[in-house]
Picture 1 (cartoon, rainbow, N blue to C red):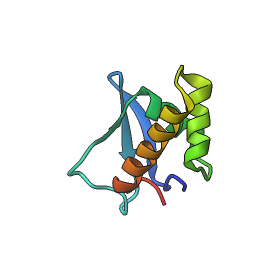
Picture 2 (picture 1 turned 135 degrees about the vertical axis):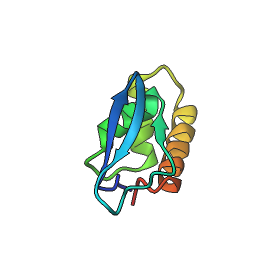
Picture 3 (picture 1 turned 135 degrees about the horizontal axis):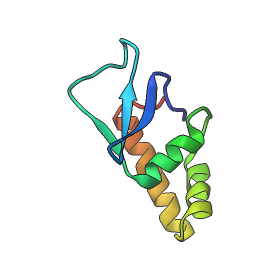
Length: 88
């Protein structure tokens, strides 16, 4: 999986928000916000191919969490990014 071109993560008033640029990505009907851990993962993988196991390892490296929880959270994040049209 890879984050599509045309999306940037911005910190707006202490909130992490995905900003779209380019005509093909602009959808003014929704705002996509990320929590701190999802924003951390976004910044780590924004220009690379990634799988759930890689995201889980990043979570394990950064947060005090067990491996099963990290993998489940990574899968959930990937699913939500895909449903929002942020990945390909």
